[in-house]
Length: 267
Image 1 (cartoon, rainbow, N blue to C red):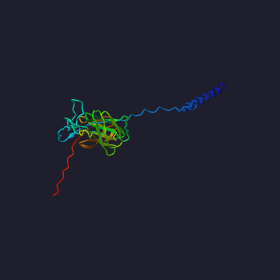
Image 2 (cartoon, helix red, strand yellow):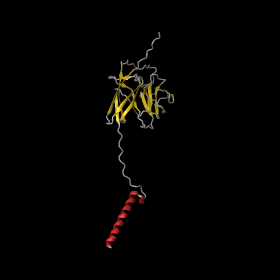
Image 3 (cartoon, helix red, strand yellow):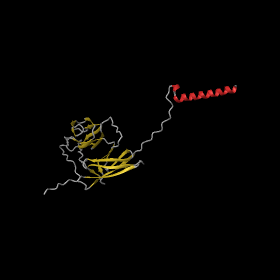
Image 4 (tube, rainbow, N blue to C red):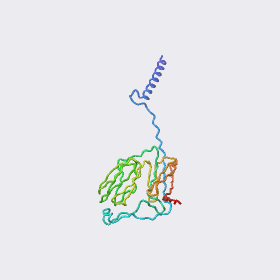
């Protein structure tokens, strides 16, 4: 009899233990969510880097300074200083490195964060700084005047709103640009002043330095279409492959002046 009671007691304990375990797993008795297995750690996406250089091809052009008269430059600089007359529309380094080439890649599915703060294009010493400003579409741009003289910001656009407005000394104005477009920026009061505002839908971009070099980081492995643009030499498109190993993918490019078309005389 005792052994039978002992057997019933063991079976009862086993059933109670099983029932309690089930309750703890479901969390029903405690009003909690069921116990879940920890999720596996997310696998970091592989990314690589595209880097290289852009060089000028062909006969080197004559270097000329901007035409700036003393009268037109009055008030541009503090006493004893002069306006920088370097023409930035075509800058070629000693080893033919081409400065100021915009190199960009658009990767599907990648979202570009747009900062709340405005990108700044300043007017200082009667020069636009920087010479080329690249912003993602939808970004705000602030046109500053750090000089003691007034400037006129003149943008001729096709897809975005035009702008032709005076910016007084020490003042600024802001605009938002939502359509991809390369916009030439000038000042009607100081005709040598020129820069470029590039509104882009690319996800990765860089501007070549004084040696013609550039680096694009964070590109996924695979083949990418690389777009190059220079204000004097025009556009060029190439293919580049970023490997799975994460190593730097090199890209060497040459750009030249477009040959002028000659008309044939009719006989």
